Image (cartoon, rainbow, N blue to C red; front, side, top):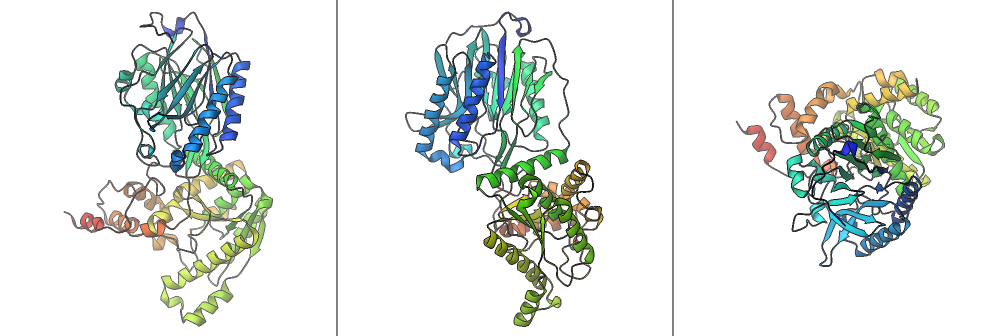
Length: 548
C-alpha cells in the first residue's frame, strides 16, 4: 500500500474520479448467512456500478449488538471465514466492512477490514470504545496498545477510516490518528436511534468535514436488535459541510456518488418529526422481534384507552389483521364508552375482537379472600391480575404472544400492576412517554384518517379499576408529569419542587417492579431499559430528600 505525504490538489478538482457506494443495509443479530448474503449482493451491486469503493457498516456479519455471543470463538471464526469468502467476490472494488478483529494473543478488537483486489488487506481497529447507555464494549473488546494510522489510498485519494464512537471525538483529537491530510473520511457505524440522534450526528460530522477539508461518508445500519433500534440515515458531506446525499430512515438503500463533485445534490434537510421517528422505531422493533422469535400472532388487551389502541394499530400494520386478536375484559367499573371505543377500533382494524368479562372471577376472589372495594389498591390489582391471567391463558392456548401496552410514563412511576398489566412478551411503548403516545396516535390518524376513534384520543385516560378513576387524579396531568420525568429519570438532577421530589421517590422506589417487566426497545438516551443500572435497594433517596 503506497501512501503520499501530502495532497497538493484540492479534493474538488482532483483528476482521478472516485466512485463511492455506501451500503445502508439491515443486519440481523446472529444471522451470519443472511448478513453474508446481503453483503454479497452489495459487492455484486458495487461491481456492476463499477465502484471504486464499497463501504458496509459496523460489525455487519455478526450483527450489533451481540453481547456475550462475542465470547463464542466458533462464531468469531465463522465470521472471519465468511468475511474472507466475501472478498473473493470483489474483482475491481475495494471493500470496507465492519467486523471483529481477533488477535493472535486472544484479544479481540472491534474494527473494520479493508480489502483491495489490487494487492492489500488491512485491519483498522476501533480506538474509542463506548461504555454508556446501551453500550458495554469494554466488556468484549480491547483497544490497540499503540495509536493506529487508519489511512488507505485508492486512486491517489487519501482515505481515513474510523468506526462509530471514534467519530464522536472532537476533530483535533481525531486528527492525531492521521499522518497525512485527508481527501475522504469514512465513518462506519452501528449507531442506535433516538429522535435527536440524527441532528447530533450531522452537526459533528459537518465539523469534521470542515476541519479536515475533506469529503465525509457516514454509513449506518438499520433495523432492530432486540432492545436497540438502528435508523440508518447515512449521508455524504462535501468538504464545506454541505449535504450531498442522504439515505432514508429505516430502510435499505445504496448511496452512490462520484467524487469529486461541485454539484450539491440536495439541500440540507430536516429529519422527520419526532412522532414519525418514534412510529417507525416501534414498528421496526416489533417487526424484528416477531421475526427473530419466529412468531406471527399477537394478543392485545384492548381497554378502550390510548395505549392499547396504538399498540393494536401498530401490531396490525406489522403482522396483518388476521394475526392480531383483541381481548376486551370488562368489569363493573368499565364504561360503555370504553367498550364501544374498543369495538370500533377493532372493527376499523379488521382484527378479531373477543370479550371476556372478569366479573365471575372477581366475585370468586371477593368471596374467597373477603376483599372488596374498600381495600383500595389490593382490590384494584386483583382486577388487573385477572386480566393478565386471561391474556396469558389465551397465549398458551393459541401460541400468540401477548403485547404489553404500558408506556414509559407509567413504567417510570410504577403505575402498573406486577403480574397484571405488567405482563407480556414485548413492550411496544416501553420507552415512549404518554404525551408521545398521543402524538403517535395523531400521526396514525393523519395517515389513516379515523383509524383510531376520536373518543379514544380525546377522553381522559383511566385504568377503570375503581369508580370514576382518572390517571391524573392518581398521578398528575401527563403534560406536567412527562417534562419532570425527563429531568428526574437520569438521576443527575436534584429535585427542588414537591412534585419533583414525589416523582423521584416514585422512580426510585419502584425499580423492583421494572426489573420484572417485558423488554422493550430503547429510543432515548435516558431510558428505563438495558442502559439503566439503578440499585433496587438504596438509602441515596433519603440523603437527597433531606440534604439542604
